[in-house]
Length: 264
Image (cartoon, rainbow, N blue to C red; front, side, top):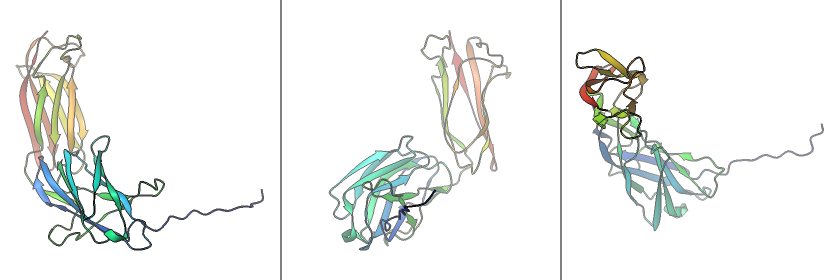
């Protein structure tokens, strides 16, 4: 039980004394893929080790990273996160003391599905994987950009459901492995928390025959399958049906109604 040896491990000095970032534009249309410039200005002093990677959070996915610009940058590679909710840029050569105060610009495209979406960021040294990434602080990274934030506002509309699609519009749930389900996809916009969301199917007489989804959901991309079965679990007869997608939020109710066909 005698203690002979005690070891302490201490984190090395931070990657940068300071890393300020801002995003442009700070306001975009809601529900559309917009082009952004992400600007980072690091202060790297003699005791800092520098960094070779920047990671940016994209809460509603990223459509693409188009280019990266920085003084002295000869090459870069982009990696999109597994579910597209982040991307990282590997910089070559790494940013060191000589790059202190030099702005890095990342040009990318992403949708904003909620007012006040934050694109948080970090810098990392991939040669030291055990070290924690260093968060970027929002502020004035470049004088010519009047943003000083990493949170994007949106033009407010009352529309909560956009880009609704049913694929295929006519399907055959006969179990042959082709067109056995119909998939409802849409974006749920600008809700601050979880809100009631329903996807229902009615017959042409207005009777509800199926509930595809009925529970709370948060802003984001939605996809729900209908297997052609009714409330009792039986296949519905062939014919045309009416679907209703509805969401209830503080701003009111938004609903979309359309038709879907079932054939055998």
